[in-house]
Each structure stands twice: as C-alpha cells, then as structure tokens.
Length: 420
Ligand code: HAM
Image (cartoon, rainbow, N blue to C red):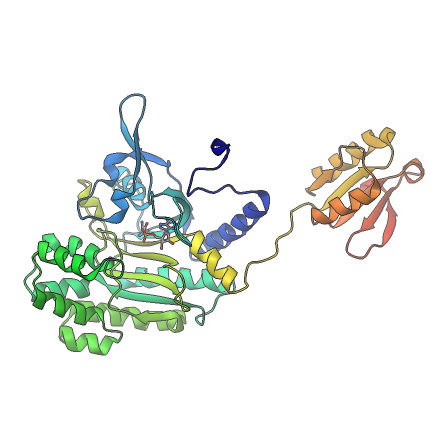
C-alpha cells in the first residue's frame, strides 16, 4: 500500500483544501495587483547549474536533482529568484524598467520536516527590478501589510523585522574581513540559532574570524534600536542612513506599527546585498512567515550586467498555521449556485435544458445525474453551498414552470425557465 501514499513531505489537495488554497492565492494576487505588480511564471524544472552557489547555503544542499533522458542535469526549483533572474537576463535591455512582477510557484526542497515546512510548498514571490532606492524595499513591505490586513491579521499578531546586510558589511570592514567572505559569513550568522555554539565558532574561525571579531559582530546583531546602531557604526554609516530612510518612508505608508529593526536579521541566502526582512508571528511559535531583501548583484553571478533588485518569498504553509492559531481560517462554501433535479426520470431532458440555460447565463449549476430521493438532494444541495434548488416536477413543468426552493429561507415558488 505504501505506493498509494503521497511522497513524504508532499501534499494532496482535496477540494476543501483546494478551496482554502484558492482563497489564500486570491489574496496573494490581490495584494500584489493592488500595488501594480503583474503575474509571470516559469518552468518548475531548471538546469542544475542555475542553483550552483558556493556560500554553503542550506538551499543548495536540499536540491532535488536528476539526469534527464538526454543526460542533462536538471533540478526542481527550490526557489523562484534564479528563474526570474534568468528571464530578466534573457530579455536584458528589452524590458521596460522598473519590472514589478509576482508569481506563485511551487518550490521543492529536501527539508527536515517540521510544522510549517514541507518538501514542496507554494511560494508567493513579489519582486521589483531596476529600482535602486529604499523606496522599492518599503513598497514590498507595504504589499505584505496589505496582504496581512486582507486575511484579518494585525500588528498584534504579526511583526516585520528588518535590517540590512550593509550593517554586517560595515562591521566586517571594521574588523578587516574581505568582501569575498561576506556571503559565507552571512550564512553562518543566519544559522546561529540552529547550530551548536562550538560549531558556529569553528565555522567562523574557518572564515578567518577571531574571537574579537565575533564579539563585535554579536554586539551589532543584538541591537534593536537604530540610534544604538548609529552609535556602534558611526554617524556616517550608510547602513544606518538607509534604515532610517526606510523607517521614515514606512510612516508614509502607515505601516510603522508592523515594523521592528532587528540587527540579527541577515537571511540565509547568499545573494542579498542590502535591506533584508522577514515576517514573524508575535507569539514566537512559528518559523518565519516570509523573507526577502535586496539582491543587486545576482545577474553578474550569471555572467550578466547587474540590475538593482529586491523582493520576497512567502510560503503557503506557515501562514495557514498562523491563521489556524488565530482562528482566522475562513469557512468556504463550494461555488455552486443552483442544483437542478428531475423528480421523474422522464423529466431528465427538461432538467438538462434548464441546467444548460442557467449555465449559458453564467450560473454555476450542479445537475443531479442519478436517481435519488428528494431528501438526499436537499442534503447534497446544502453540502454544495447552493443557493437554490430547481425542481422539475411533472405538474409544474406541464404548466411551464420550474419549482424553485430558496435554500436559505426554505420558501418555494414557481418560475418560468426564461425568468430563472
Ligand atoms: P527563503 O527565505 O528561502 O527565500 O524562503 C522564503 C519563504 O518561503 C520562507 O520564509 C517560507 O515562508 C517559505 N519556505 C521556504 N522553504 C520552505 C519549506 N521547505 N516549506 C514551506 N515553506 C518554505 C527565498 O526563497 C527567496 N528566493 C525569496 C526572494 C524572492 N528573495 C527575493 N525575491
């Protein structure tokens, strides 16, 4: 029987789960579209080399890869950003800037299973290319807050923590660590909470960071206040200026309540270069709801000319756990409006005529195809969430009418087919 189970870490979506997924995606789409983003898509299968990066990121160790029948090394995408970069690069110069695009791809990672993490997930991606100011980063935060508001979450339940990779860059510059090591150091820092201390220290040492440097880094990472950060990095710090600008712009959007500066946010992907952010449940119970940041130098790593870019990825799993915890999962009915039923087999063609007429009018109609008792049909109509039951009864049909039962009120009436 084991072959009949879905592969560990993957999900089947039965219709009730699919309804919930459709609801979630409709809010992903609406929040992006309200901010002027356009939808795109790309194949789930990519060349493995698209994900070859050397900074020691978890994501590159979790790839699902295989060789296709012609010997090509391919991978199931673990994230959308490299595909997006590939699309932008292959139309370099031809796309009007800025690009504001979103997508809801399914992504695959061979992860350790835990609440809110699977081996496949759908990840809402929202990205802006060709806009270098912090205005673009804040616009993304505004998209997130629009989404949270739409699904009934408030700053009491969700916080957006932000920092900038430039904070760490400046700290590393001050202790003499070269640019080359930068991404690798960020990856170790992102893992700090998950790695045993001795192992983290060993990894830092391998990257050339002595005890003193680690203490300096940890001080900056422990800060939760931009003034304290300014004290640590100096008045002329570019990172501080950028983060202060971000705060001011966020006030314009009216989203300050959601935001929280947190020096420990670096994110675990090598390509981020500037502001980085993630959303968290304030309860502290769940892993990051989403994460993103600025990645201005990704295209040159593919051999192209760089273009400023910023974006985020937002999985479908943690958010549903959070909505469950907050009692915010909506009750969703099916989309059937009318159920049509012939009380006698000889009225089947008439029932089909009525159903077809209604469907041509754009009504969603479920026609009962089997011989059933009226009691069953009523129960079925309720299960479908239908608004009306259209009954083909011999006497009424003879007189040119359909018997209509309003399922909310139970009131019955007789209506001619063309007036339904
Ligand atoms: P990421 O931080 O690796 O970023 O993932 C972003 C989000 O995807 C996570 O915060 C989480 O919601 C969801 N996610 C990731 N892995 C899993 C998993 N195994 N199961 C369930 N959910 C998961 C990226 O992927 C970047 N490409 C995002 C980005 C877009 N940055 C710029 N643009």
